[in-house]
Length: 500
Image 1: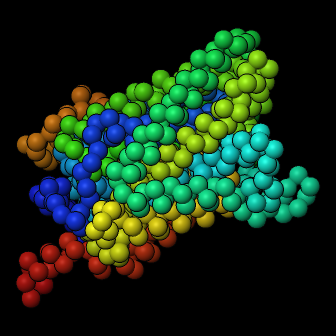
Image 2: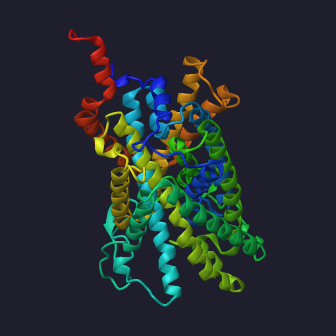
Image 3: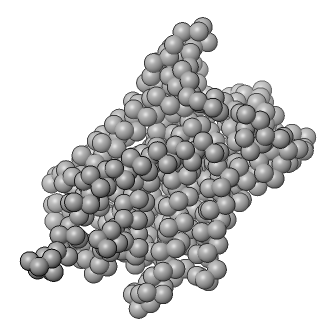
């Protein structure tokens, strides 16, 4: 029964009210929390996966894929908002699951969240590198492909080595690794400094998105929207579920779901937010609403600027603008703006993962170093270093496509558990204070669970195999370390006395 030990909500609330130099510092108001969410959401999803999934799965109907993913996300976001208002502690889905379902499931979801945040940062860094390389080419400073391209790719069957255009082997995507390192340094320097950097970058990023939508809309060719839903292509070895048609819309939605995970990152900031019971729901729901509108507008515009078949590139927004000579003046500005803007997404994702490590360490499930907070900067230094190192290595070695699918799988599984957790708490703990309550909970939570399960089903089959391998490693780590160091097992043994 130790596997299902629950962390008492009273303990969580006591941790939420801790003060001192060895605790996280409350510096974030609702504006900063919302911008943290926007920074996490507007990233590789809107600048990279939008075009790639239009080319591979959905065609111009990529907008419908965003609608489908957005609706399912809204159900999950409402559940997150209620839990964040109840339990304002760092750790996001891990913490909520520990308090409701038990330690074992909390560990599984935490291990799953490493996929979500760590690999998401790697995914965005790979997307960032594509725009950075285009930007440098615009200045006449091309980076050699051997050092700006991941050495591995996935051809639909197996991981293969990549080569340059001249046939030489590639080694590392160095730009992807460098940007992760820079954002890790920003996080370590302190939450106030990170907040300033993030707010400035997110503001610039939103201006870039609005510029593409505003100027691009004037040159949209409606003929490129037809057929809006391309005819379904039967399954092939490279595309086991087929392409396009209604099936393609759902398949694209399952992959671009990755684009929405930033709103969940807001909940990891609960222990650094002012008045978190109020701030968290505002940040979660407002960031999701803002970004859904921008996603829809961007997807409609870019498939109206260039044939969707041409957008399967590392920088599809730039490719779409390049197809319209009148917008050539905007091209380099977009490359610069996106290269800067994607940095805030990486920062938000690294932030979320390091705070989950912090929460796990305080529960004894990870070594104590992950829970140590620097007395001056009040940030979890080692958690940030480990997260950044992992993300940099993966981003430097693997392409964005294979990473994006795994991140979506991790995100969707987390959302299923969160929707279930809020429903369970309504039944088991009806009297707990809730500053925000999910409306129509008996409809919203099941709809969120079923919607996420459907998108999981639509992910490519090889993603399942990679997930099972990852989760098997997680079980080894849990029973090899976490199970024996859990502070809540120790507490129960102490309470039981010597006879136990």
